[in-house]
Length: 193
Image (cartoon, rainbow, N blue to C red; front, top):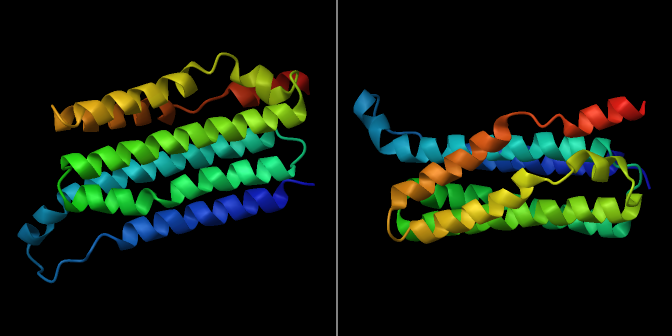
């Protein structure tokens, strides 16, 4: 099976996720600058989640570029990833509306962790379909960022109860870690060409 439908469906879901997140930012009914102040935490959580969705979209695109064949397990693994990404609007809104309170921040970290694990599962599923010598397998190498991220999310979840601001710093740090474009797949594909 080709990958065109998988890519189109995934892109559509991610576009909807971003749309829902921005619609959660309620427009103030006052035209004064002071009316925007209560929206600052909501906007900051939106920006962070927007960056995360962009990171997943970018890396998903590169990963599928290296994928030659889509099978049933790949479809299900992709759907599993999209499930966790589809929860971003809820956890983003809840965390922002409650000014980064502990429980919403913990749930945010849990969803980030689950999405990272789901991405890893999709990656491993594609590798198992493509074979041990696949472009994707060679490109990801040791995947230190992929292994480090869930651990950092867990640390952030634990720190939320003692130093809530540290959890937000860690969520931001992981995003910064991933925002630098990952060229491993592109380099491997160019080398094979």
